[in-house]
Length: 370
Ligand SMILES: *Cc1c(COP(=O)(O)O)cnc(C)c1O
Image (cartoon, rainbow, N blue to C red; front, side, top):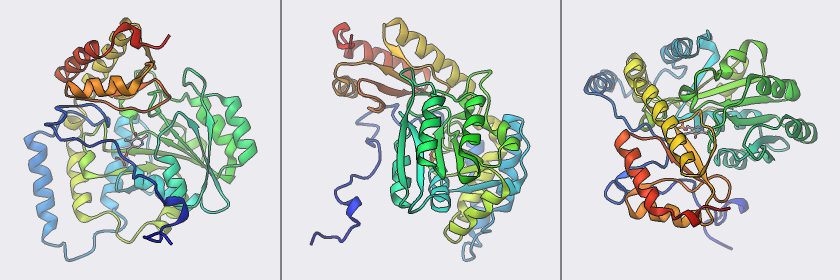
């Protein structure tokens, strides 16, 4: 008998997570798509004062319906995407990862199937495993665009109760057009929910729509967002979704009691009051991203068009070697995506200069796969 008495399917499984190195080991950290710009003193002061204001009542449980925060998030979505949702259509948890796990707990489960299309976010199979949901993965086209014929086949064969799709996609940066999302919602029908994971939505290029616009047309559509990326608040752990109120009500059944702490609620509300400042660098990061894509292409590399704050590029005969060579020069990026590709997050102009210089040193022309 092996110890501890783990579930069979968890034995020997390594915990998810990119290498987390210290700033001494890797001064330029471009591996987990964080926003490189920290909060200003004004934001720090408001967060600290807001937390101080609730600290005196931490003997009490927080508002388990986080009513004020739902209102503030609904306001923000209206401001960002021009779409009005009622606070009853908003749900939040400790990161959008928790939101999506709750979706699987409510809409997945034994005898049910969740579907995604690869390359896709590596956490999805873990939500499925942890909620005892069967996980099936279809394929995207070779250029990472979405293949509706493949989706039709997979949905018809597996009748998923949950479809999970990032848009823009992680790790490729590819956004989904409205027609794809609308068609998927129709294919899945009332037997399932279609979750569009918009963790990177604020970085989308001009003309790329948000799935939020489709909410009135499809009651089985769920759009998740996070304050971790564009909002520069990864450390606070606040993710949320917009969907039909019936879907939010279902999540109230599976959430843990008082899952959003008073400290988290106060921090998120303070950050939302400073949204213009916290999002102020998004336009700059988009510009930096577009310049990075152009530079990588000039070097003869393949680059996936990106609507996110990261870029997938390749193809390398030995990507691990290139990754290590960059790290030796203090630049940490991510080995992810299909064999031969690497992903780099968009940082400050100084960080991008360090990345470019390290990559020039790391890659001889013969390094690039034919
Ligand atoms: C970063 C990321 C998230 C956000 O996770 P949080 O739990 O909100 O920090 C969600 N989905 C994808 C695809 C991501 O890359």
